[in-house]
Image (cartoon, rainbow, N blue to C red; front, side, top):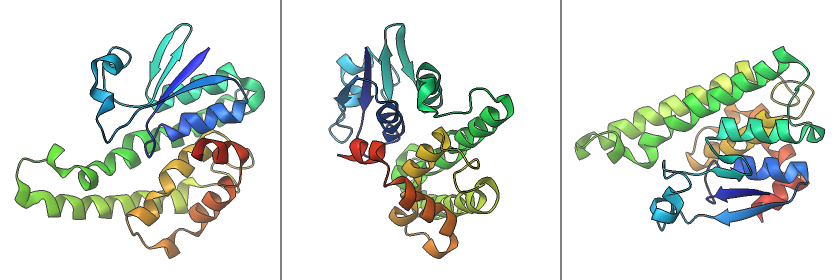
Length: 202
């Protein structure tokens, strides 16, 4: 039986949506990130990184979204969350997910917790300003070059779509110019109507 450790408002929404897409039974453990539950000894015994998500399986615990999402897609192939039979299409999907994990998401760090990036409080405003510019550039890249349509990689709904859904909310949260992202925001509206997304957000 699978057990997902999820922090509301975090990137762990992606594997939560993916699990709902499969229709499989799983246990959900909610981690209160604001209260710092992710740093409790009990959770650190599960994920020493002190972050979410973590997915407990009968073979052990998986961490990091790219690994967890891929595992879910491969364990439940009938859910069609990835083009498993097409190596190039699968790699293209993974390329997008890698961009999210290695570039887009980490870029939010200086905006949310500038003290992690500098011990000079006088630099915080500049850090945030540059990070906002970088976030806009990254969403520009998705809008103009990486988004194939109607789904992220083309005709098939994949892990890349639920991943983009999770992070596209930052356009509004960071008060970026929404008029620049019609494809991304149109995609967000379509994906939000999926039953798995609604279930994950309950």
